[in-house]
Image 1: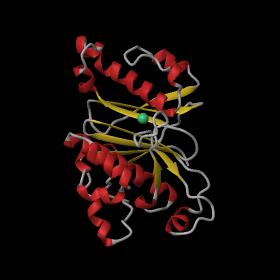
Image 2 (image 1 turned 90 degrees about the vertical axis):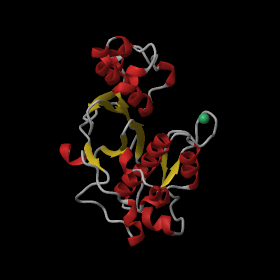
Image 3 (image 1 turned 30 degrees about the vertical axis):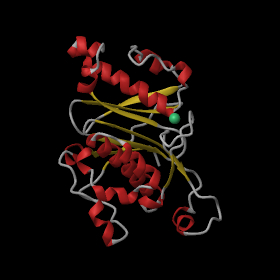
Amino acid sequence: MGIEVWWSSLTAADRSLRDLLDPVERARVDSLEHPADRGRSLVGAALLRVAVAAHLGAAPDDVLVDRTCTGCGGPHGAPRVILPAAGASGTRSRTLGLCTAAPGVSVSHSGLLVVVALRPAGPVGVDVQRVADLEDAPGSAAHRHAAGSTREAEAWVRREALFKAGVRASVRPARRAPSVAWAASAAYAARSLSTPLPGYAAALAVPGGPAAAPTVRHWPAAEGQRRPRSSSRAKVMPAFFSFGRAIA
Ligand SMILES: [Zn+2]
């Protein structure tokens, strides 16, 4: 099984998604000041669980996610999927006990879009960026030359995806530096992703590359949607968003 890329939208944000999250994730969502930030964080955490659960054949709220920051130990680090120890008892070992390797995961959100990448074994990085947000950044090249904004956004998301895939911070270029050549020469591969909405750039990166074309999924989806395991979960599947079908 190859890499999966799951797209969702800020329009999927619903309080009922909180039921899928663990207390650390809920606290993180609640700590954000702006409603749009809370919505993106909520959908991102839920989508991560939905993607991993589909991969493992588990329920989203049974997925164990560790977000310990490697810098300070706080709960805001890159997410890492944890498999329960072999022989552990309880629901989690029954639902996840057949899995031998935790998938690599990466989450990004910008504007209206939320994206999760899942790689069955090994690290993966994904990044999405609304081009207009880069244009707004003071001092950005895109701010001075609007025609270059898409190109700058493409370079930006490749750098970010590569970093999330494991490129060491010591070789991470300055965020504004043109680095397409650097990305191509590193022992990592990045590829651009089509986005469900215009005006965005997105990229996927893996170590060792080249990155094969991923399987693209949309959540919530109109068809082939995994049913929630109980009727009380039905409300966590909001109506699928209108642009999903356009590129499915
Ligand atoms: Zn930290």
